[in-house]
Length: 340
Image 1 (spheres, helix red, strand yellow):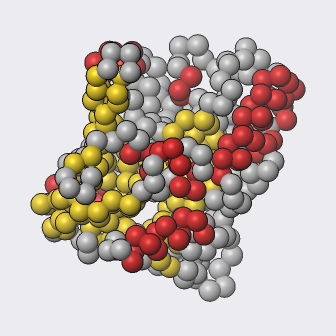
Image 2 (cartoon, one colour; image 1 turned 90 degrees about the vertical axis):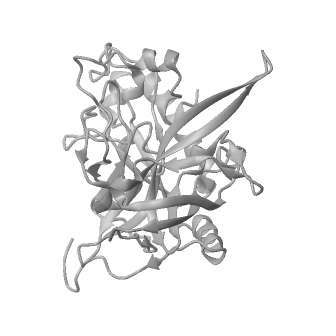
Image 3 (tube, helix red, strand yellow; image 1 turned 180 degrees about the vertical axis):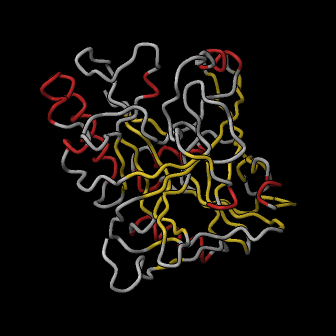
């Protein structure tokens, strides 16, 4: 019954593109339903990743590409963070088996002569069993000709009032963009309270479906194997009603940053997009379902992997000691004496 989905972009094979290209005339419901930002302003890049899947039935390899998002955390050398699940079935090359991937339109970010030289990530089999492993560090030889900022990773465990989530994903029928899109969201304060995801009113409308959704939600928490590993946002409006027009991560946003502003007006990195949960089986009793919009447009909750979590932090420090350029901060977010 588990329907959580890692946010890999759909395979760009013609038959599948044809299946998802029928959105003319319908509004798009994704983060993408957010505002477009220059990648330079939020240090966010688009990755194109090459994959290979062995088809047992015909004993041949199938090749496909995907899109994920990534965030710049270092310039010397150029260092990116993304989600490890983006590298599922990735093709490898060279004597050290580096992933075959590239930064899309690097000229928009003022980056040239890019060559991947190190990659730190765990196999998808481990990631799928433990979400604290869903982190990858990519280190490049590159010329960074622009003043693009490397984002520092925030070590403070306190939850801000607002998180800005960014990425290159696009929803059903939504046009591609050269720049990432962002949306501001209030984080879910208590992941142990399922009513913060689907309020009690929806249980009263369809008790069985609500119970199924709660069971699925609990299973995802089990995958984490640790407290405080995930940040989360839901799709509820100010009236505690599910609203499918609110910005949420979608396919292609994996690895994109979850940001907060510090006291100097600079972005700091709290986490990266990991996965969304969609509680399937449309209910005629839940009024927000629209038959003409695919179920992929109905994420109820989106998760970001918190980079300050001890498991994640230990992995990042290992990459740092092995040549990655990663900086951390725990400076106050707000000026002294301010209220929030």
